Image (cartoon, rainbow, N blue to C red):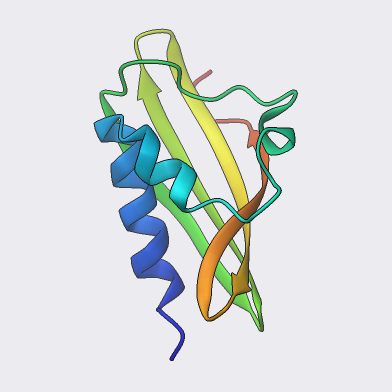
Length: 101
């Protein structure tokens, strides 16, 4: 049974806000770290809050978009996910304009 992507993604965003690095890395597809982070601005320390702004699923691919509020300003992150043994795993990451940057 495939876990619902939106549930997985919202849990992942909450882990970013909480600073749960181990949990975040467990959501990554095998072999995707560290290359998925190259050239991407990600929250480094404290995240005040996050807002999920989009969740899309197309077959065995999914995309989640969230805006993270950090002391240095908002960070818009779009992540690509694929199914690995019935579980959603992140395998791509890019920034998008967060609106009030």
